[in-house]
Length: 330
Ligand code: NDP
Image (cartoon, rainbow, N blue to C red; front, top):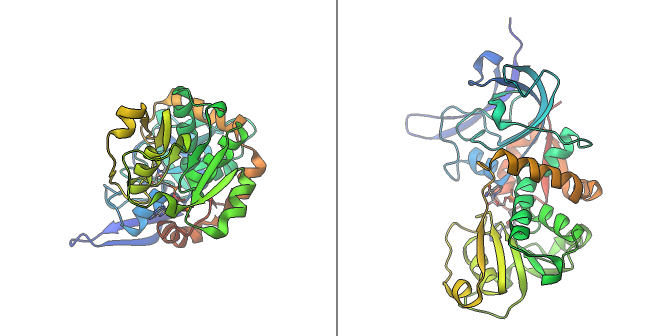
């Protein structure tokens, strides 16, 4: 008898009604790929919440094992870059959307999708960062490429108490920026100050009617919220500044005007983590290893087991998760 392992499987019936169940799978049930990995840690990202609850069409292949990121150890490989025993990280590439994902003890993927676990970082810590944190680093790198630096002025982070936001606050403050953290959760003020936020502002300050141009408040920003929040952030960005947009927790629309772009030379930098090229991923993970304090990582993450994934997935789409959720699979 082949070894079985537990997996979360999302299915859909003939009426396209989605259901979620824990099933026993074997390696023969996994999808095609040239590397098999023993998943040691994974996480619950906002996108995983959308996939499991069915709130947005993240899953595009049925049935599917969700889970967009994992860290673990290679158990078998036909790929020239990877050998049994190698420690690896996977983020995105459609895993947990069109390819069986992280919520199983084993994953089979393309070796080209993997990056090595950086020296000195455990699988658990890599997943405390996870796709949300790696995306936060992509946002920081985009701002830097645009010339944003601590001496240019404050930077704003929206959805600050969430996963992307918490990691962005921790990285930007370590790099010396004056970080303005925007949150809808008054109770998380002390948490955000501990991560390094110099100021914490209420989410409401960025959800009112959008003026074409408002008082200049920051040189740049990391936005995980979208919609009116991003439009207000843009209108409040100083001359020549830039905002990295990566999320839609507040909505997918953008009720903005061209005024910030054509009158203040503000730039909107689009960030996608899923299909980011390998060199960019390697650079992001190298920077994470140097520019993010492990102590802060511990402060911003909570750990659950496999059995807690479904509850955490529901909680994250309700905006109830603080920071990052790590799933230890063992
Ligand atoms: P979280 O749920 O952890 O964080 C989102 C935060 O946004 C919440 O904690 C909350 O912060 C704020 N928020 C939630 N709902 C609203 C609302 N209606 N209006 C205003 N603010 C709101 O999610 P993640 O950090 O995992 O992901 C954040 C976003 O980034 C998601 O949209 C996700 O899909 C996207 N993302 C995109 C990636 C990419 O490649 N572009 C990769 C990873 C994530 P607070 O309570 O502090 O206000």
